[in-house]
Length: 406
Image 1 (tube, one colour):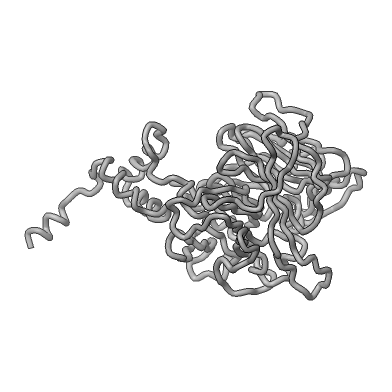
Image 2: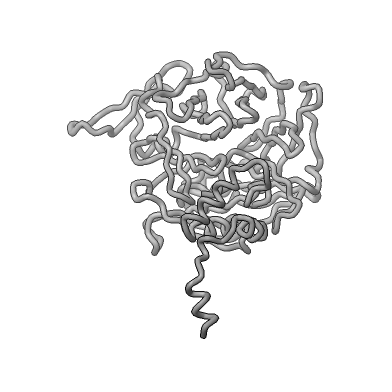
């Protein structure tokens, strides 16, 4: 009885930081997040140590498998507005995270560095950390030179007029259509507090630093669309559907107006999507996704495999890779594509490409999950990643998300 009384009176909030550190090393990221919200002192201790570069962090993001945000309707969930996430590192658990009510019908257009990029009901882009509920406002869509808001008789914005083609033809889109299709992808670079997003149906790229009041539009070569973008060490890379990779330096206070070519033109041309990703060994990779490319409206496009190319040491030729090696795995989709070291990560296998749905043209008609799986580079086979009800029209599409500690 006395022992139980002592336990009840013990002040666990004063537990030394070193003990918290030791405990956290054996926990998954989800458990560390739970640990950090027990009390204020634990939260501050974990947050401080996570920002302390002189010692190992409580949780190393490279040692975690990204969560998969599932395509569930917020209104249908018994716990209210939010999203469900599948966590392989936590034994295949599916967890529900509540979200602010005004973002209940959000549309996710990307994930990067612990943030979701969501579009609200007014077609405005917002950065959201679902683990803490923190939001970061970005410049308004109306600050872009190609977009003009249109108001109804009540003075509310109900449409946007914009020019997405290089010939300058104007189109009027409603809020739902703008929300779903205007932003193909958005990413974040924490080192320079910079956001980049593909806009205008893929014909332009817009960038802004956190706190800016307007977007800066970076024009790409006339007539060519952007397939993918990525940040690396302050540089923005863009994959153009002409087969070129472009780059520009965003470290300077004055944003550049010109692009540099990276490597030779790639004429390999098939499949629905192409991706840029920096490997664990700091090699720039260009990845091609092969699909059955069916044109029938009643059929399902299936992923057949991936072809991976690396930029050679001279920064000139793209060399095909038959293997990623046993210590590396790629995560591709509408997220900021990443390469992760698999050593010491529970459930993560090397020489694999983990992929999600990101075919905007068919996402509303195909059974969700048709494009979610794992591609084995060694035997060129595709296997399922996880199972959930296949149902056409679920939104937003599933996407990989790497959470950060609060």
